[in-house]
Length: 323
Picture 1: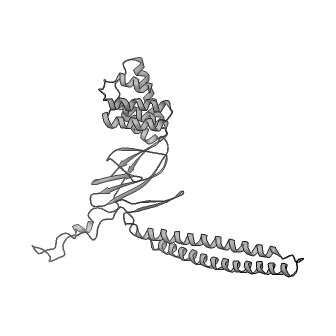
Picture 2 (picture 1 turned 180 degrees about the vertical axis):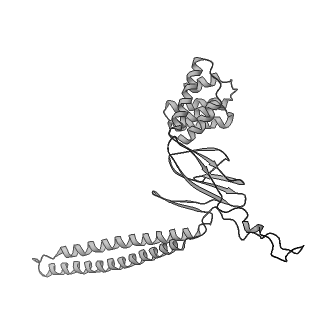
Picture 3 (picture 1 turned 90 degrees about the horizontal axis):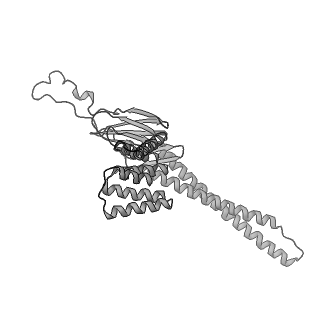
C-alpha cells in the first residue's frame, strides 16, 4: 500500500470519485487484516472504474502475493510499461521494486508464442481464448494450443514449457480450406459454356471437436455396466440366502436352549453366516452403483455433442463443451 500511495503521488494526479476513494480505503483495511484476496477484488473494482496504472500495478502485486503467477505477469508487464521515468529517489525505488516483482513472476511461468496460419478467427490455449499474436503465460508443464479457421479448419499442437522458458508454437491446419482436386482440369471434350466448373468440396471441413463416439469405448462401457449390474444382483441374492440361514440358525439355537438349559448353541456359525450376508450385501450394493455409474458415463459420452473435447490426463478426465 505504501508503494501504491507513492505511485499515486508520482503519476499525474487523478480526480477520483468518492466511490473510488472508498474502495481504496476498504482495500487498505483488507490488507491490514491480511485479507489479500479481498484487497485484490477491491482494486479490480477500482480499475474497472478509472483504468489507472496505479490500480493495474496494485492488482499485479496482490496477484503475486497470492501465487497467481500468470495474472501477475500480465498485470505487472502493463504496469512497468506505463510507468513514467523516475525523477526522485522514491520513484527510483518504486520503479526498481516493480521490475523486480515482474522478474520474480516471470521466473515462475512459461511463455507460449502462437504462430497461427492465415485465415484464423480464433485461438485457444488449454481451451481459453487468446488474442492473435499475443504472448500467453502458462504454468510449467504440458499445454494444448488450437486455432480455428474461417471455414472450420482446425490446427492443434501440444507444447511443454518449463518455468522461465519461452517457446514459439507454429500451427498448421489439419485440412486446407480448399482441396487440391477442386482446381482439377475438366475432362477432354468438356469445354465451352456447358463445361463443369471446379469441383465442390466433398464435405464439411473438419470441426474442432471429436469425430464421433468411439465404438470401443461405448462397447467397453456397456459391457462393464452390464457386468457390474449382474454381479450386484447375484451378490444381493446370495446375501438374501445368508440372511435366511442366519435366521434359521438363530431359531434353532433358541429352541435348543429352551429344551435343554445346559445346551450351549454354536453361535460362531450363526455369526459367521450373518457376517457373510452383510459382506455380500455390501459387495452387491457397490457393484450396482458401479454398474449404474459406468452406464451413465457411457450414455453421457455417446450423447456429447461433436464439438466436445475429451482429454485424459494422469489425474483424471477432462471434458470441454463449447456452445
